[in-house]
Length: 175
Image 1 (spheres, one colour):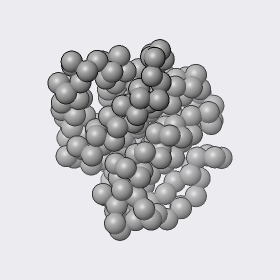
Image 2: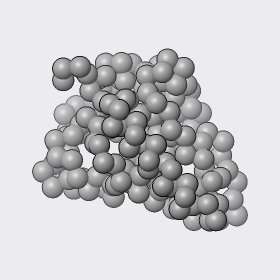
Image 3: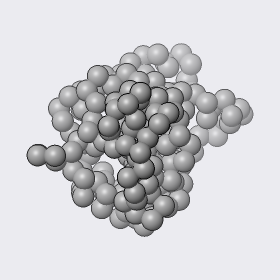
Image 4: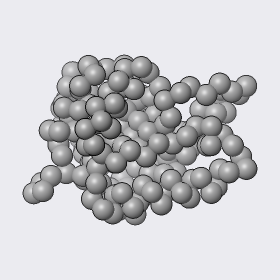
């Protein structure tokens, strides 16, 4: 695409490998980082206001045609109800993507569960074409006609796949 592609990277994976892959993206300023504080997400008193702020920040960055790194805080938050916390985090990621007003040119989803919930629940991808792999174990699909953004490339990047520079090389290649 002339001028390069705008990429939205969504990272929900808590693996140390994912954390090491996010670091060069932030350090080299290849994407505007928007951190989702898990402790704020799980704070019921602040939830609605916090989500509104995240949606506004995400849309502002996308409207400005910046690459965006939307990622969950890297410190694992211990809760009594881990299953409910995971559900809140997943639903929040879905809600953020559903409320995008300026869609990017492509999305990279980092993490197995993250990739699934964004594809199925946020982007409503029920049919897609597999284009191949950008790296071993990292497939690229093209969203089908009935999805939220038909024709959008969607890269499924599992949490424990690749080297510390794998995400960096993908972002550099497609930007």
